[in-house]
Length: 251
Image 1 (spheres, one colour):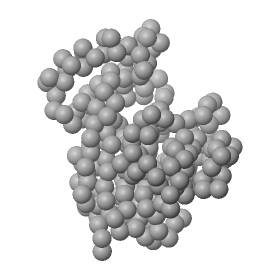
Image 2 (cartoon, one colour):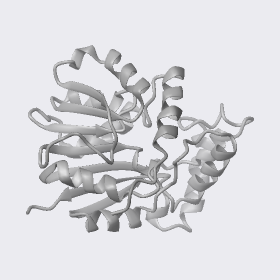
Image 3 (cartoon, one colour):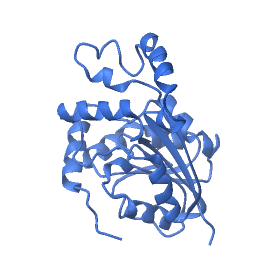
Image 4 (tube, helix red, strand yellow):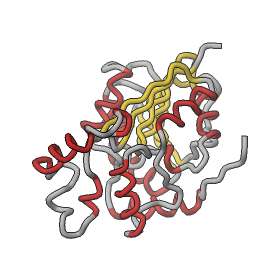
């Protein structure tokens, strides 16, 4: 296993700045709910590590289902912000600054690791997989939501966002088929992924169109366009993001 290639100081500085600007979550509440439903509606007694928890929106949703949740983020400012936002869950919601490649948890101690738009911030992901496999109990779940490298429309958005200076120093979209193979090589099986977020995201990056074509708007135009484009694309290429779910092998 190689050493880390992530520019950690730059990553922390980028997200510290974001924390000064707004409450940050990678996805909407409804999206998070759909991603975590596979773990169950009642998570009482479960221990979940939300890695890259940002302002704590997803961590709070886990806590609302009864789980004991540890929100981990590389940004001290996001962690400080998260600690002020969810007093109703203070008995089971814990935030701390941390690094996905060096987690401060005992071996075989947690029931699930959740990564909400996190893995694509690591140019090499092997150390993250290894740490998740280490702390998960046998049969524990690894769930991640990541930008889909197989979706050409998503790649256009990334190019425009890069030109506008909207990307952090380490961001790269991920091929879900490659990620599936990587996770299996690190002791997760079965591993499955599904595409999500069916959209034309780069329209929201264009100054003259951004207000009419945000992620929640403009589907009068986007739906027929996607229907046409999808006729020529494999199913795994259609979502701008994908959800991938792996189970740590027993033994």
